[in-house]
Length: 334
Image (cartoon, rainbow, N blue to C red; front, side):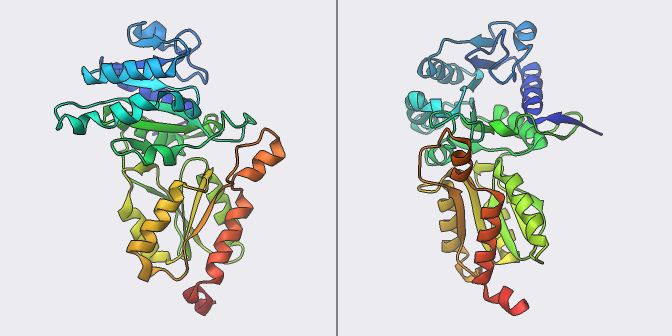
């Protein structure tokens, strides 16, 4: 049995189930109480769980993120909400120097079981300080796990796994996916961190992506099929830990790869994936890995300029055709 709910409702449901299951799970952040968070993901939590477990904070990301690290050190499982992932810049010390490192610096005597939830991404005309995709920054920091769900089912299952994890997890939610409704299984389920998901089977090229760009990739795959090109869409879901075996399996089948991400191309996580494929699967490739990513600019406020700033369906289609034009195997088969 399943039900159709929005991605925001799925995240809320996952958090609610974990709070009901474990009294050590708490919510921390701005406007979480009466307002129910800026995107209504904790609506009703204050009345049900009380102010000791739904901690409404001042506008001080550094302060409440640091507080959550301390709580995690004492066995509490805080779920911290940042209003936007952009705002983590003011709380990087407790995140990258404390949460990420304490388990290792104490020889495993201490764990930091906390989740930092943060809306990310462009598309709402929020300009440069509210539109970034910063997953590459978080993935670069050893000790942090990074999750970027694209569907309601994945968002709920991964949220439950993140809360139960004993390491700090950065849980990035694309703002333009919140309202998207999809089928979610009834009852208890958890999706383990570090398992990618093939959202569409294909044989000619692998499109590797995550978060909102999964839908762009699926639309591109439909368009490519009109030209007789069958693209496989691999949704990573979790960037750290990375499901390398799923990537390898797909590459061994298609021998052509396009990596798609919304974030800025320079220093993007797509570059890391491309490098790993080129280093470890070079002999399996029929063409160089192609990257599709956001431009190396600050996200504009103007709607047309913002849309031009990050990858669209046509960009993915063009990149796939570019890759296949260089592919010896594909050329011979045609």
